[in-house]
Length: 340
Image (tube, one colour):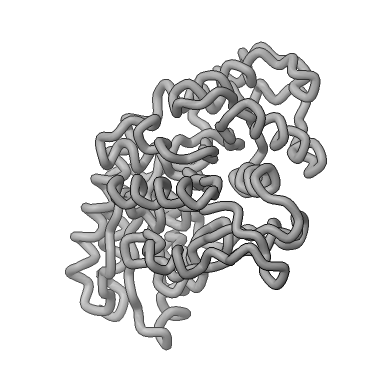
């Protein structure tokens, strides 16, 4: 008989809707969103577009689809986008831009803070020549592995992109974590970008969905791509209602996730078989000798703890809505017993 999972630190995507969120979803006023008739979806799209300083928004099932719709709206076949080698839009979205859009990624090594160095960006832009893909778009990510991008860097990078005639897209899968950690408004974090993808099913705890925000013309193009990609949903106000509840009740509480991540990192620092490499917002990264990873996985599973082992070069632990103080203390105690 398997040990029940007591603590799931794999990702903030594993959150389950709260009872209050489920009740809000059950009460949702709905219509056919493909016809543009779902009032709850329209409310969500409008709310986030206004909050981030844009004209329009588009609700989609996932952040991957949101990013892909943005790339397809900004680029044509034979174009390329500048992207971090460790960015989600390059490394963890199944190559969708290349496979489905014939858009070439130009990966650039991320700096330790998640930025793409301006000198590297300058070198990556292709000349207007038939031999090269056409450089059309700069994409950044905030947060990146839990790190909040330096606002001065973002301003410099987006200003440089505009000067080159490039569009800009922000993968804001955890943009509200960045807002809470930095004290900046969503609109300030979005400044300089043409489009922003906002995920609602991570730290905010909604069960499904992202919203792509941007200018009306770009979102209209992205909406066509959404239909082609199978992302047109019908009475999706049931899902949008969960997202609206999250915006009302789960944004400020992200600070609790950040505090618990810091507490977890401090506690794990006392475990002799583990090296805490980094702690940013709601993510803790630890290093364990490669030969001991399987042993750590078995040790955690036996104690009912899940972690992302083998998914990234180091072990990632993520705090979220379903991780309380007791879960943090239990995790520290279980990790401390590893190789004790």
